[in-house]
Length: 260
Length: 318
Image (cartoon, each protein chain N blue to C red):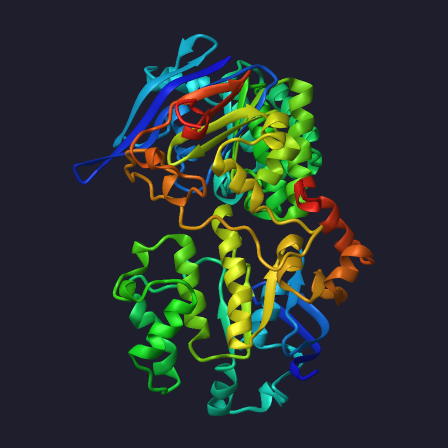
């Protein structure tokens, strides 16, 4: 299997400087993790365990305190700006809240054109048409503004924007937790569909075991900045080892443990 | 105990009247836990605010809300204040913004207690300690400020605040949505536990049917401000009748199976204020008939205490 992302001994410490000394807070502690091509990975854990910070470092939105990240075989800390931009095009992201991740003053067309403009790629009507229809939004709605769409539709648009550059890895930070129940299933189905169409690998950040089970091949359970358990979803569900894993599984409401 | 009849709420926005809640009626008895299930825009939170007279001036509230036979909707603000917090208490979704950041936990509790009871500071402090103990929080937290507590702890403090006056009705508006699963379970267990001890009637507002199954005694499903179905929990999960209820249950995700595709409900939830001549779920309904688009189905009691508003069960056409 081909490696997509490899994380080696990664740590991150936030320090708050203040007049009276300040304190250091270690949010990631010696993380080792590999994401293989085509193998969707779920990053699971309670709030505050560092899963979003880890994703931000992979996206280059934060820098690690120590350790290395290789994306497509390249150590990203050694790259210059231009080289990093090239790698970054291969890693795209969809955030939790589709209300705050689209610019309210841009039409959908403008939002979808952004990635092409940033990376100097020519894109025409046909590209946009393909893009928008692959997430189930009609091309005639492209001149509309975000507020004219519902939450689920906005999340579809965010997914389309993330797909624009045909990335290899799509990072999804709690992509359905702010959506209505009746829409969540639609978006999860869509994610698996575009994974096939675009030959993607998904990195799903979630605190919901059921969602991870549906989307992912492997899961990593995080607790207090470290990875506590890693393995194939079926294996972990059948025979959980870590303390955090057991707590998360036991806390699921009965209906999410078994189907009626 | 709490009787809501024909409650209607509409907002006036730019000269347009937007109806968000249409003719909602139900009763809540002592010791009952009623789950109000709905998606965003279904009017479930607006309804809770309407009961408490907390809506803005541009809202028009019609109908009646009676607590122990006393009408609440036309009460003067001063009298309403004596009811809120003492007889009806509320826990909101976001514990971060529901507590005052410059007051300690002790201040919060004592303020509430002294507003509603004529008691000395000493007794108030004693009762504040008891209230915290009931939600499993250490006494040392009395001197702490909200920012020093975690999300789950803050929600516990909210519950302690709501229950320290022994209210008859507790309204909980998505109290666990902002929390993660393990904390969610603790909070739900706590509500269940305290409810058993105090026999308070609970109105639990949520969009998560998995929680409803764990907690509620009765279920009421709202869609676009209208009641779709009402039944006891056992009946609802065993024999859901409305296509919307069925579809909602169908799209629950569980860890016991890994399907290739989930059963989704097509389309999007209606926007608040959207007007429907017929059933509001008709555009998304898998078993719709021609009549559904033109005529509103009446609410019908199909079996004892099981109500459903759907043409499939109206007897006119089968």
